[in-house]
Length: 125
Length: 256
Image (cartoon, rainbow over all chains, first blue to last red; front, side):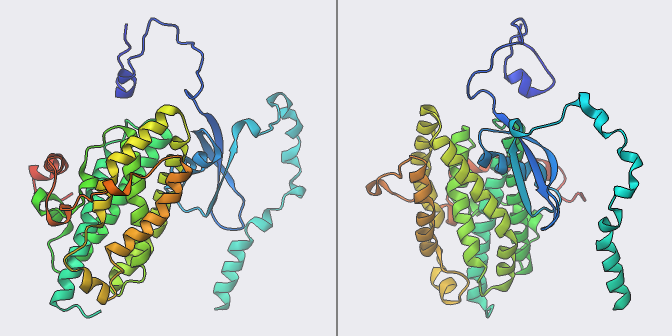
């Protein structure tokens, strides 16, 4: 039985509904993923914006620009292989438990300096 | 520049062929929307097609400022004989290798064309060229990256890219069909002309094609496909126009 779907791309693929959905991926059948980071303004942090499939970093950059940069301004992109990201374990989430209590460690004033300076400049002019 | 009668005609001819190339190729490439080879590429290719329509609109607007009809009328009410696009851009999308190769050859020329036009003595066009340059740089980057990737990919991808290059070659040379106003445009400093552009284009694409392991067809076989600039087209253009204008023709005076 061939799967019929509202999405023409699925119907076109003529998937066999009776066959097991679990099949082994062949080489070139599926690309690995890259994480995409955008920088809005030179000097600012790069921010994670999403993931793309790509066969290599150049193609990931190519796709990352259009997936996440075609709306809104950015000046620079990074891409990194998802597999290269070394992450903490969710079982260890308790290492962050007391963080909200330590407001004395926060550097909130620095985050608004741009606005404060802008305001001062406006007042001065 | 002095916009006397001769110069105005020359500039209009230049604007028409540039705008028509963009409108027709933008429409063609948008036909891949939803059926691209992978999601990321579907979005990228569609987004570039949209860039082209935006660029075409800006050029039709310049023509409007020079006394031609408004952009919608110009884009949607002419028949194929009144279009000045090169034949390269009107061919159906075919398989993805063809669409990619056409995009690579065309957009390399576009980037160089608009880079030249940044210094145009016709200031409104120089201004647009400076604005479009970033988009075109990405289009070239996209085309170059794909040609390299697939040229060096599998046996199948390489042979597909080579046969598309062979098929596109004379059509791509046709993009540089000289204008009847070539001398005026060069003398008036509007731009350096098609011949100079073709030379720069050759220098830009040859190393990419070579690095991709592909071969430019033998020079003895080169036969530029001219005629499109003067309204001579293949049987592929009118059906495209019929489809593109279908909704417009339902109610030409509608406010959108």
